[in-house]
Image 1 (cartoon, helix red, strand yellow):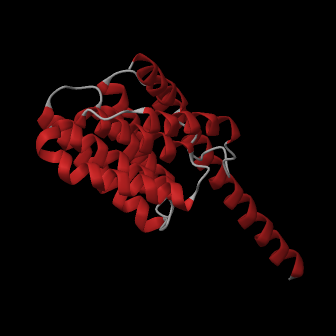
Image 2: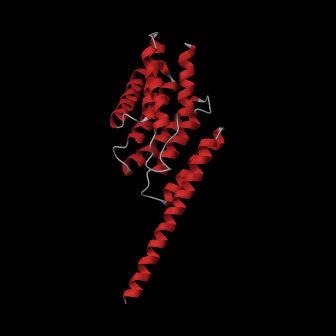
Image 3: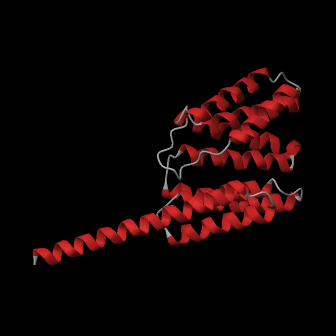
Length: 213
């Protein structure tokens, strides 16, 4: 009897590890696919891949997080304002799901700010008063939860820089925040190889904007 129980235990453990390996492998390939995307279609395809993984792995927040990110990045690929809103609305639904699976997560809070930030882009004069403040609040909240999160810090600086530029204010302080965030990327310590590490190239682009102004 003991041998039978031991065999069953080993079998269950092997199955569990096998499923975990499959999930990690699928996620790693999908993340690579997302990071290498360079067109609207490829971003949407990557986002759809994460949605399929999320549907299969119902308790994992990362697939929905990356599916959300994929839709946000898709919104960068078009100038159709109606389409941008549609991609951001889809991103919001996915992020809400991720937040239910992983509450009080600074990476999820950062993406919430990112969505608000992109909502401003659609119509700055009309949406700026509402969404700028909401974006700043979310980025600030994420940075407070994790002061070492480079994405929260850089996007906070970029949002502040955009606000300063809109009102004709000096951007020295906002650019200083961006520069501080850039330095954080080299010190990132993700808990797993699937955790978010994106943003350095975007941050460096923001630094160039600062240098040009």
